[in-house]
Image (cartoon, rainbow, N blue to C red; front, side, top):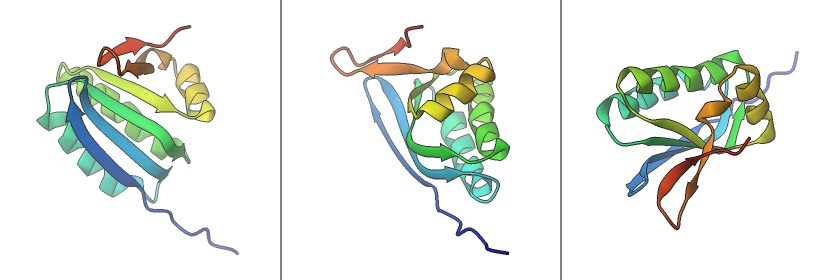
Length: 120
């Protein structure tokens, strides 16, 4: 039986006028999520500005990977914090639509430094 090599997920974050940007790179799955979950919970719980999650270079590998995104959304809502996915691949967009979560997908307009809801 061949074993897949586990990929490390990296996280970059910065703040600007539009909010707290968090970019994930790598594959979110049962192997990579446990440590990432603690970091994301800290980020969500410690802030008050808009949380902008960039998944452009991130692959949702399984239900555990998708679940950590859902957890972030729910945790942000409980803390009255705005949450928006600002970039994601087509597969992640489909997953969000199927989960009736497409409303959290938007884009950041750099000219106005504000989050706008996605069209559609």
